Length: 244
Image (cartoon, rainbow, N blue to C red):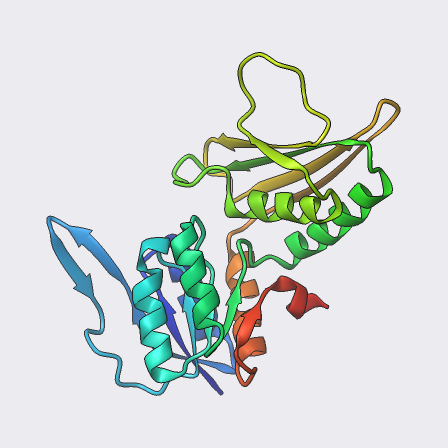
């Protein structure tokens, strides 16, 4: 039985993770923790974590990453980091912490997105002169744009396009540059998340697309990562390690 602490348990995704843990026969909910500000007051439950914990799953907010890393480092706990929108400083802190504890970090916890990333990387390599555009759409409450997943896809494209640059939110006058990778964000309705990679030459277009129909898929992916990372040596892991 794996004992899981869910951080960000009151949020939309955190609640789904809590429910998924409670349904799983091989998992136990050791603690559900959340912190949020309301009228200047910070609330947390439970105030102190006294139960045994094997792994932490985080669906809170990137601004809390430093506090969470400190908690995990003090207790040598593996961490599944599912938040997005990290600053360069926060990402550097995650990388440094991964030298001491195992951290599974992904901008998207979907196995389908992992497959999309792999397929897009192969297609981009096959058509080195093609234009590449990444388009993502999410619900109207999402704070960061473009999504962490879109940026993850863009970085995967840059792996096979050395020297390429990102054009995020194209606007204004000027033709498309040859070494550009475009990234566009849409915010509307209650969409769980759609990501498309479009690879176009003068004679053909390849469109690779992933649509999330239910946010529960991200909870399922996070718990698969939690099962995977328990017992692993210190290091930074992602979906490639899980599906490889």
